[in-house]
Image 1 (cartoon, rainbow, N blue to C red):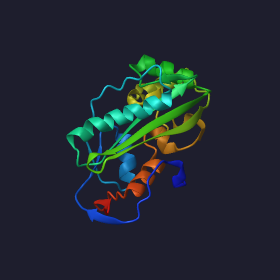
Image 2 (image 1 turned 135 degrees about the vertical axis):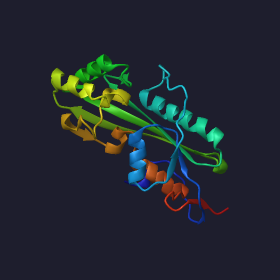
Image 3 (image 1 turned 45 degrees about the horizontal axis):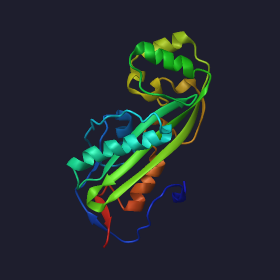
Length: 217
């Protein structure tokens, strides 16, 4: 996808500093897997920030602000390491659907999603205090569910897979067969939109597989 989609700088000259890793302030195995599949070297340092939303802000802005909050907390402790954070939310009928509180809540969420379309927003933030980089982006995807019977939903919830996921499902997991179609980035729906993330790494000169690349000054 073209870089023009994302507000990124143009840098033309580089030198390499080895042994620096990307910091991922998330315990999400899905985000870690996406980075690993892209051959990105990273270190997991989960954040512990308040992830509550501003009820007056639109959902996409809330996703972006929570991602910035996560990245900022970890970046304060590790100012010389680039930090990438993300936050994913699901929106149905203009209402935010978070992670289920319990199995009953997960069943309720999935019953509501059955046979309908919803929106997935993921906010991402890249902060590198040593280089004064503060970049953020929000990616939007749409997902359309087939009709799913309650018994199938209850069986899926009993596996435990939905319990740590916004919207109570994994598009790449047990709910894959329920998806009629989706529009936009699949990695965004999983939890980390790799297209803008990789574009940001390239534009800022990061090559985490070979060290970190910084622009000459």
